[in-house]
Amino acid sequence: MHRIQNYINGSFINPIQDNWIDNYCPANGEVYGQIPNSSKEDVENAYIAAKSAFPVWSQTTLEERSRILIKISELLEDNLQGFAEAESKDNGKPISLAISVDIPRAASNFRFFGNAITQFASESHESVGQQAVNYTLRQPIGVVGCISPWNLPLYLFTWKIAPAIAAGNCVVAKPSEVTPMTAYLLGEICNEAGLPKGVLNIVHGLGTTSGQAIVVHPDIKAISFTGGTATGIHIAKVTAPMFKKLSLELGGKNPNIIFADCDYKDMLDTTIRSSFANQGQICLCGSRIFVEASIYEMFKTDFVKKVKELKVGHPSESDTNIGALVSKPHLEKVMSYIDIAKEEKAAVLCGGNKVTVQGYENGYYLEPTVIEVSTDECRVNQEEIFGPVVTIMAFETEDNVLQMANKVKYGLSATLWTNNLKRTMRMSNQLQAGIIWVNTWMMRDLRTPFGGVKASGVGREGGFEALRFFTEAKNVCIKY
Ligand code: TXE
Image 1: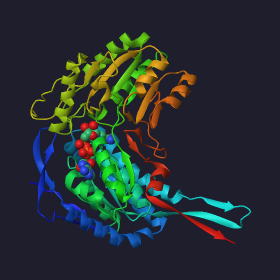
Image 2: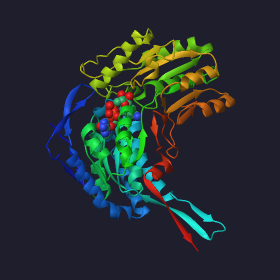
Image 3: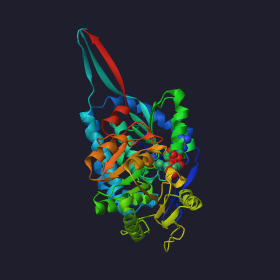
Image 4: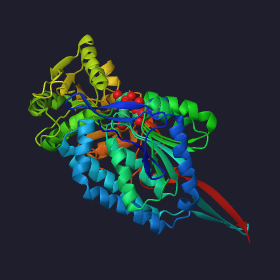
């Protein structure tokens, strides 16, 4: 059985205690490999490697850091097919998505931050009348921890690592134990690109052991985490007394608000994507759909018809729209919400059942599901399901939908469909979310701040925000 290894100090090594975890293929439910079940000793070794690499890396010129990051990006592009196949097999996502989104975006992350670091600047303040000038140094923090989830494995892993190393830090990183494969492959690419040993160290294992060891390590001074809100709460609690810098990108339950004056076809096509892309396992998915009453019945008919046309199938088939969910426990969690919907007397308009894909009977497939709710206060409309399940309901007025949109504990993103400029401005100002999309969804410009409010997390990633997170500001005041 194929075993992947930890990547520490530029070498691939087994976990010290020789403990391993089975890795499942979601498309057929079979174990296809094993990954290290790393302990805190493995994390300590990764930390030691990172600490030793830091003095040289933090003093490496920006041009040289940039050159290496862009080389990593190019090598990812050269190996697009292999990485996409690995991602699809590990995660269950359609290969078409891994080829068009996940791996290109991972390459873009390195290219973007390789370029961004050459443009990163800090402020200076002339203290007029006091004969002094202040300037701000932006210094790398040292060794930082990056912990990422399973839904967009390499995409989110590199979204953290690239700015961290661009800013001159050395990293101890842990991908999700559910989807470790592309992070493992990244180590080889980093060596080929000439990234010095120890700048990036990748430890595989469970959140509660190796993840926890990163989080509580006294000398890992900053943690960038993307994952579930419950884990985010735990990390915030345990790191508070240690005064660590924290960036937490957590769950979402995002409203997709559709007004009658929108471009209907564009809205319908995009709403299919924003509901079901990646099996609905994207923190940005618009899982609560609110439709203006005057077009509600038309939308319901058209949307359900389109949803029924989506093909649930093996991720490697090019015409598959919906692949497998990431794991058996996750499939069970998502399905439990379909039972909850029935208990809450909501109407399941389509979907709701497991799908048996011929030849892959033990895969984790679920029909795309649309639930019509009569109140926004039910659990399916309030709790993050994180699967191919959306709720729909009608609204009467702008005030009414704004209130419902904001009445959840999360606040990551919101989508608005309207051609009314004043309404766009009013609603964008008042929606409680870190990201608002108007007449589009998940259109990304890597320079923009990315993150949420309320239970969707703290801090912003993206652009200079990420470089600010991964540096400490130090003010120098010189009197002349
Ligand atoms: O995430 P976890 P899970 C949501 C989604 C999902 C729920 C739970 O609703 O159903 O979260 O998913 C590591 N110390 N999102 O349980 O556990 C873990 O090993 C340090 C939204 O799979 O938060 C993995 O690397 N690390 C989300 C990472 O945290 C710990 C994406 C995420 O896993 C740890 C995924 C600990 N104590 C799920 N415990 C998004 N925002 O996109 C776990 N980990």
